Length: 167
Image 1 (cartoon, rainbow, N blue to C red):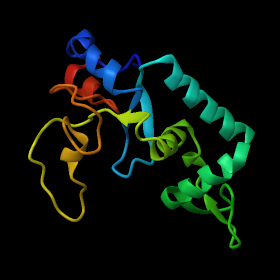
Image 2: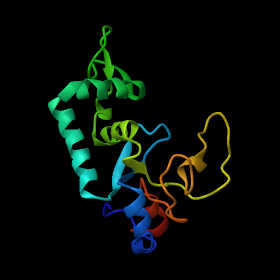
Image 3: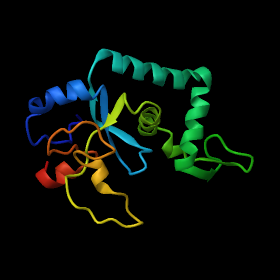
């Protein structure tokens, strides 16, 4: 947990759920899950982090076109900027800010959702549904986008805890 995230409760009360239901866990930053932050990163076992590290090393060493496949996946979320990363025939590439650890976590989650699960980031609530906003309930406790229920708590993907609890 990053130092600027506050805990409002006892982590030990959900330790069994985390240990048994989340090999790795992190928090999404956006609804399309193209950025996942490690502001809270749960590592459930040694094998999970070894596999994730091997994935990152594979990207860096461009094993089996892994870097090329990552950029192809990322293009749908972060295109286009003239002169960006991996430009197409028109010179438009991926916006450089998007090539980072958060999009790499997101890419890993897209490939292995059973190994990197998402923690709930919004409270249970009857959110307004319309065509401009995703169903926020999907990202809350018991939602379809998150792993096993961790109780009524949420995991701070940004700095909401600082705003609510002060630092």
